[in-house]
Structures are given as structure tokens and as C-alpha cells.
Length: 166
Image 1 (cartoon, rainbow, N blue to C red):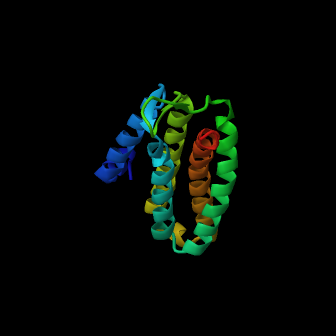
Image 2: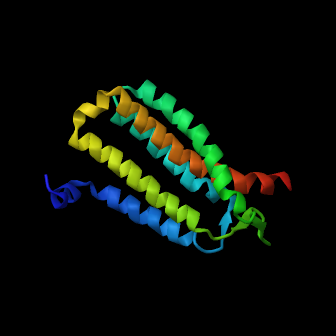
């Protein structure tokens, strides 16, 4: 199968999701006001997308979910560390709104996360036998959890100090 055919066979919703994620990533380059709950949008989105994929894309969902949890924990620690140099959230005049400083970390992580998920899912499409391979299920779950954990760690690194001052 050539690459052009493969890309044309990719569902439209995948490209829409990529456009949405890139839009969010480019917006994250600049300081922006946001509702505090919106801070958790990407971590929750990637958690749902990851868990759904782990459950539906692998035949060893228990193995994949276990590795996803381990990856979430490791990724959270890594994300917390990556975001240590980021300025804290700042309050605005509007209750429930904060200013989040711009960073290229979010865009970079979005690109890495999407590419990783696309590659792993494509591998399953090209080699369906991987669905039941223990090593692939471990990799799929671990990588999914690791990437989402980085989002959670970075978000918590920003949120917890802001919340503790309240």
C-alpha cells in the first residue's frame, strides 16, 4: 500500500482532530485568559481518547490498561518536571478566570502525542495481528499513558500552586 492511499484511507475525523489539536497548540504559544476548568481540556481529551483506544484497539485490554496506568504515573512525573520553568497561573479580574503563560511545550507535546497515536493505530491497521501481541499491547498502553501523563503533570504543575494560594 502506498502512502497516498494510506493517508486517503484515514478517516476524516482524524484530520479534524489534528486541526483542532494544532489550533489549541498554536494558541498555547501566547499568554491567554481561560476558565480554570478549561485548563484540563487537553489532559481529559487525551485520557478519554487513550483509554478508548486501549480498550477497543487491543485484545489484551487488561495488559494495555495496566501499562497505561504505569505510563500515566511516569508521564505525570515527567510533565511536572518539564513544566517547572513555566510561569505560574495568574488571576484576572474575572472570578474563575486565569492567565496562562504561553509556551511551545504544549504544541510540541500535541505533535508528539498525535504522531505517536497515529503511528501505533496505523501499525494495527497494517498488521492486525499486533492487536493480540503482548509486547505491542504493553507498548500501546505504556506510550498512551506516558503521553497523557505528561499533559496531566504539566497541568497539575500549573494548577496546584494556584489552587493552594486560594
